[in-house]
Length: 519
Ligand SMILES: [Fe+2]
Image (cartoon, rainbow, N blue to C red):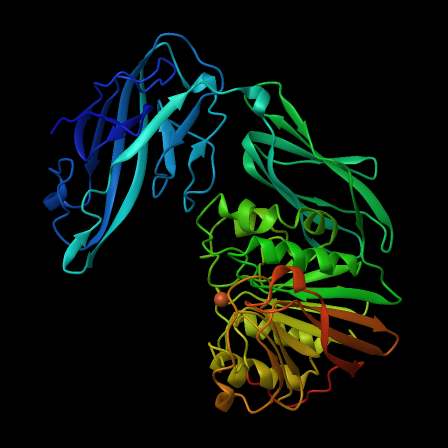
């Protein structure tokens, strides 16, 4: 019932399931030294009398509550809560006050910048709510001893206040751009641009929209973060963003599936940046596990820092993001509340189909998209989505795409669907709208396995890649670049132009028959 022991280091307090009492001599700075820590469940009577190392009684998902009672004698500055084994605890309260941190669907090892004002001299209560999945593996229930979390609450250093990630640009239109960032501690972030400022709400994830700007103009912008609990500030460097022009030649890129391979992603983003695109389209699977708060820096944000800070990007999301709340807090969409959106920049209309939402026949998304397509005057339309309609890669075709979406795309002269999910480059020509797969941003490459499903395939390359587009007048030209394959030695990687395609400007919609979405 009561257990306490030193584990891994004197800094860590090991917590078992059941009622635990820490007896070890952790360093003085750990406020949880000597804490009385109780872990209980409120959902399963069968599991309510756990003790450390005892297996869960059955498969299932169990909700748990951790309660740590500890005494503070000297008020610390800006405490940091460290979790040696971070998942799946993510929701914390201190003396009844919710602590500002990453969203509840994230796991993270550090909760930084806890306000000293949440603590008091004397007895304090730290609480966490979390859940564990118990499942059978090789005949045994696993995890057998979930709950062995190692906690440390120590004084922090407000001077270490800094940006964790970003800036990362989201969408941009003819008079605005959106920028996001993450701060290590709860802060308010000010966007400074064009002699004006915009301020975010207190938090660790921030998104700001600068508006009233001029199409085609370049603007310098900077982010300034101010710690909520203190006076510390942090400044980003000054970056430049160009608001998309309404007319004239445009250059843009498409890329996707950056996950799990920051080295390749850094190169792909770097090569794409050299093309000086006006904007980018990302087709999803940004990181390997969207719930892993630190993976976003490691796998995506830091390797492509300059690209992300200077090139506006239209995002759609893949299966690996796990639809985490942060997607909707960090990345900016043209219509703030819609992650499935449309925006027209110059000669190009971008339509994002977030497949986490319902895009089936008769769905509000599909009906709305048809209306937008019917009204579109854009010479070129690109639909971005994660799973490709047509693919001869490992995943193969997506019936929702081939049977529901492509007939609509064909009807309204959509130039191309651009997808990821299959980690390759492929161009298919089913007859009307072109199918492009740009899933070569870093994730492990897939071979061409399902050609029988996709007789429209014109070229398939199991290589890292990105796509470059140029519009000028009535034409849009594609250049598909690859960057070697899995077995290519790094010192032999080079960009290779493997495919080109030119489209002429579409004619605005002339559909008169009832459309599939309306039937
Ligand atoms: Fe995927």
